[in-house]
Image 1 (cartoon, rainbow, N blue to C red):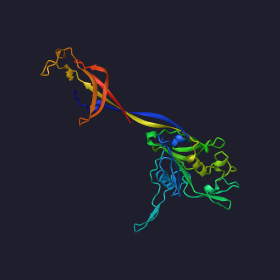
Image 2: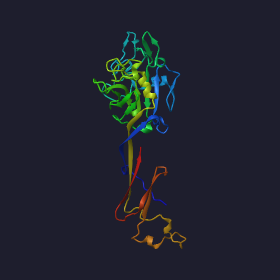
Image 3: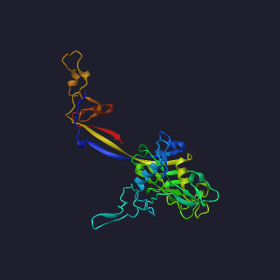
Length: 353
């Protein structure tokens, strides 16, 4: 049996609670089905090539969707900031000439500073060294030069893991081609420990609230401080500052199994507290059917129930909606006697995301 009482708005308190959880994965565990972090290679011209470990898309779809969502205001930018708007002129007859302004897209900016968003828009040519690494895979050698199609890399963290957003300054990624971190302003940086002029360079961007890490390669003109196979085929070790970032860095970021990644996520939990108050004059009669006398056929209760010293006990609290549907049940740790002289308040706490 049950007794009902309506709760008012002042009886309900909702309090947000921000939680942080850290994650760390290595190798193939990154793309395991119970983790769900997928990696994609984007190529503007590879319409028929699939990419993705868990869910496959065409490489061109990855390239163009990432461009549209996060880089459409930066395609013609030379310094990583928002591009200058294309303007149009209005003729006397009301018609227009020229382009419609093209920097009015919402690109989910992560900082009020220069986001340093660089987007590879077309094939590019570099000097080919005498010992070509990756010539067959990356381009066609022509008169001592090699033509490269631009790659981008995308790492996608599922919402079930990043919650509200990836915590800024928490991303650390280690691969064969370099060590990467986010700078808290939505920029993905590569450490350059052997280059005395700077300790890191920008190679991409992070969209914290989408769980997206985009490896564009940055300007692809800054030295990494490293020499070795990851770049010799494009720019070589003889350039000031060592090799620069190239397509093989991007491919390694996406394809290597020799990778470790750690990051923290922010989750908002909501604690809802229901204050169930029993007035001193309420619920003073038990609804337990065991108080009915065994010798009575008319529902007469035992004498001890009618005494002034008797108080019923509360054992369970149920929460119902307006349609009298039971939504939640709370069990008392031990039966709680009601009072005839003071109000009795029971607090019910429910946590939800």
